[in-house]
Length: 228
Image (cartoon, rainbow, N blue to C red; front, side, top):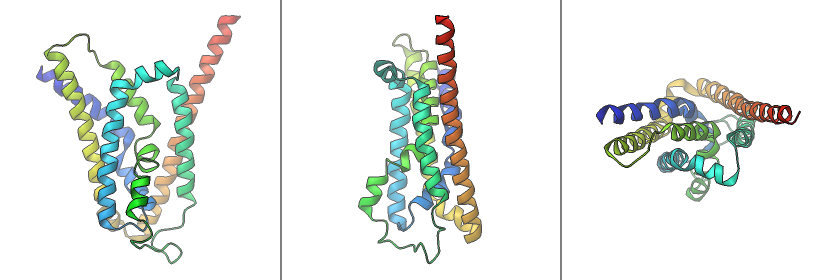
């Protein structure tokens, strides 16, 4: 039982965390919350981490069922999500540089109400937990071998949930201490890192979109070949 618990915990953690990439999200989170004070960013970090936990758990245990029920394929999810990521990344690439007179940082600019409104979209989805993460979580759910209710089932479920909890905690820590991380980079280093992160996010969006389009084209080709 312990080996099943540990293997599922590590499997979920190793599968979902690299795609989420919390360290890469940290500078984007900082840029998109320009004007927020420390307390607001702390609150946002908690909300985003909780949202990530709920979304990943829901995708693991309900994702395949919901997609099947609605007749939506993972390819379509990738196309739609990829477009959202591209739009968010493009906005970041064209945003004004932080810490300049053109973009003043003050606590009144980013209110608590605005933070609450933005906590899920776009800060949680698609910036932090995008379609790639959801697709990975759905894949994890499809690989869970739950055939009956027994001690192994409990080990699988508990290991999976604790693995997602570890992912959410990592997200919280990276966002919560983004300021300390970026402070070490300095103003120029922070600006460069933010631009690079936005560009990488754009590339990720294009990759997700292309993966979806590729799967759809292959599916269409297969259907046409069957007709012939």
